[in-house]
Each structure stands twice: as C-alpha cells, then as structure tokens.
Image 1 (cartoon, rainbow, N blue to C red):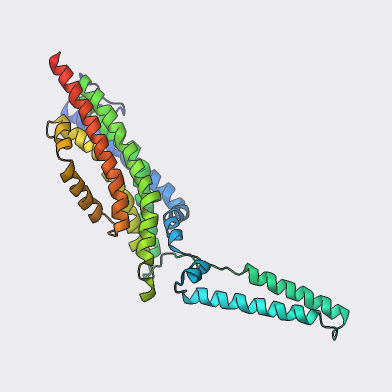
Image 2 (spheres, rainbow, N blue to C red; image 1 turned 90 degrees about the horizontal axis):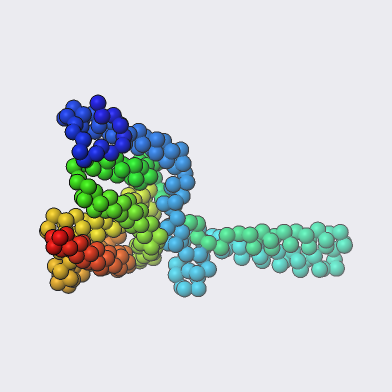
Length: 321
C-alpha cells in the first residue's frame, strides 16, 4: 500500500487500490489540517474579528472632522459635544468662584481643585463618533458568524498544505520535463493568492467600505449587520485572491495550445473591457472598488503576456532541437 506522503515518481507503477489508498491518506491529511486550523482560528476568533473590523475605522470620521466639513453628527456625537461644553462651563464657573474673596482660603483651594478636575474630565471626554461595529439581530448569530469567520480563516491558513497535497497526488502523471513547468506554476498559485488577499484587505476594502457606508448617510440611520459585513469582507478578499490567479490560468491555457502571447497582445482592447466588467461585478459595486481592482488586473494581464512570450520562445526552441 502506498501510504507515503511523499510524491510518487513518474516511473512508479501503482495499482488502482494503491492510488485510492494514497488519495485517502492525503484527504486525511487535508481534513486534519483543516480541523487543527479551525480549532486555532476559533480559539483566536476575537483577534480575527478585530482584523476584519479594522477597515471599518476608516469609515468612522471624528466629530471634529464632521463639524468642520459641515457633516451631520449622529445623536451620540451631539450628546458627547454637549457634555464636553457643559463640563468646560462648570469648570470655568468653579474657577471664578475660587478667585472670589467672599470664600475662605480653604474653600477657595477646594474650588480651584474641583475646577481643575472638571476641566480635565471635559478634556478627557471622547471627541469622536463611536467606531462602527457590526450588529447581530438573531439569537444564535454571534455564534454562527464566529464559526463562519473561523472556517474562512482556517481555509486560508491551510491553503499551502492543501495545494501541496493536490500537487503531490497529480505529480506522478507529469513527465520530468512537465514537472519543471508545473512546479513553478504551482508555487505561483499560493503566492499570488496571498498577494491578492493582502491587496484586497489593505487597498480595496478600506476605501470601498468607507465609500459605501458614508454615501448619503444623512438620509439613513446606518447600521451594519455582522453577517452581511463579514460576508462582504471575506468574499472581497477571496475574489481578489482568485483574480490574481490570472497569469496561472493563462499559462495553463497556453500549455494546452488555447491561447498565445500574440493573441493576448492583439486582444488588449477586448481585455480592458473584460477586466472592467469583471471588476464591476465583484463584491463592492461602487466605482472606487472597480477602479482599484482594475489596476492590478491590468498589471497581471501585462505580466501574463510577458510569461506567455517566454513560454512560446522556449517551446519554439524545443521544437527546433
């Protein structure tokens, strides 16, 4: 029985039972990896939720910024400003009383100390709108949302091992020359995926959420449901991770003779239209997200042309030999 976790050689001959046994072993490894990753993510769910909540901070302007820009303050911010003004006025009144000669010196010192405490308390009051946090509306929603977030991150953290197991299982079907092509391609998959996820988290989500949450907010009492927000965030990052696989997909299509570098160069106008449509239908239908997503897609399209040009040249050199 082939129970080893190492890739099997191309020249090895295995029975169907051996292949099934190897597949079972690798599936067990994948499931065990997912379970361990899920346990770790569920244990650290608070930290993961804080990571997903980080883009919301850019959509929460300070009360001072809204006041200077003429924006509408919500009721909590208005109450905070009123309390701050009241404390400041009380502190000033106590300071004036402390300087009055009608009070004994001991009382003046107490009034001066009280005035200083009130002024410090007024300064310590927050001058910002409370940060937006997603809300839950169902009895079990906090638990189910936490499970969903842990599952998403577990899949993300397990991706390198899952891809390696898939690569090791199909590797025996490749000839030595095909392995030289397949190995760099397989290494590109997790790197491009993680790069896409990072791009989505740091560059796409903050402006997209800020634009969508603050758009016409004077007309709405903006509440953000946890299930919808986390689905939007995770799908947004997964989408950018998947669209970053564009070079890998085009390389695979080139390997089977479907597309060439010459065809990509000749179809760049159609590619721009297709990229714009793809960016528009991804999560975050606002123009800000669409434009931000188009930039890396265009760069990846240019990189794909370069990679396919190199692949076509190597193929031509081998045919000449």
